[in-house]
Image (cartoon, rainbow, N blue to C red; front, side, top):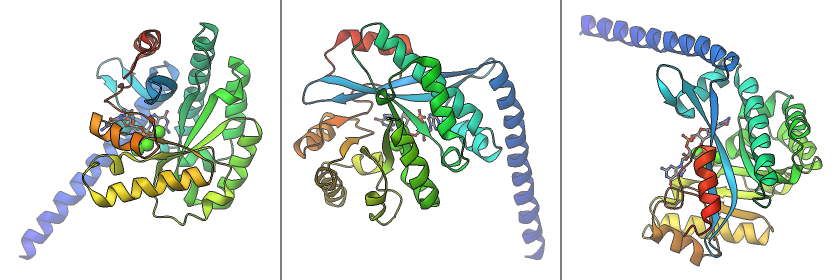
Length: 279
Ligand code: C2E
Ligand code: CA
Ligand code: CA
Ligand code: CA
């Protein structure tokens, strides 16, 4: 038994080392990717199904790797956060998204707000305001057309910092959204302290409705709370007509998900905009 224990231990450390090695390798590759501008943004439509209209776009970063192809954010954002590269990547994302939103406005696509994901570390490190100001100035985008998506857990990590940073950003005119809402196991009292414009219902609650009474109750509670607090509310991860019908029936016609549109490169997204009828 002793022997097996030791072998298990060795196996465990070997795995750990492999993981550490992978992280370091990715870090070096990420630095190169920043230098060589290998990141791209895809855009997922946000749709008001009651009017069958695209009301916004969420920018989602991808890494166009010269050898490995398109790599999703789950593969490199955690490494970027851990190794202190997220501020540089996040700054690039903000600039690219604002430039794109301005280009769409100039192309006559009305005024389409673009939503950008902000990581916990960006919120914490004190450079976010300058980054946002820089991206707005460089692009000439109206601040009202920029939405910052901040996760509930990021806000809870350090509430006092979050309040101060978000109030500052709010003064610039940008909109603040709480992403993955409902997953943070947090006290709802924080909603009162924060300058928030919109809640995004996490897709884990959307997945099994209609038909799962707990999830149905949670969604109903979030939507009604948003209404009473005069916040906008949007649901993510909508994959079926039934889910969309359920949400719409509850008074949540704003949604995002594969049933409506997948995240697409700008050219494909523009095709969607031009087509008009989404549902
Ligand atoms: P998120 O902010 O919750 O973004 C939504 C994710 O759900 C996206 O994955 C999107 O492709 C996916 N999705 C959209 N509709 C559906 C659906 O109907 N069903 C399912 N199953 N999934 C759907 P993606 O693009 O892989 O992004 C994953 C996460 O990476 C994002 O989760 C976000 O936390 C992070 N991320 C993406 N872009 C950025 C960025 O520019 N900066 C930072 N800090 N994080 C980012
Ligand atoms: Ca998001
Ligand atoms: Ca989300
Ligand atoms: Ca999520």
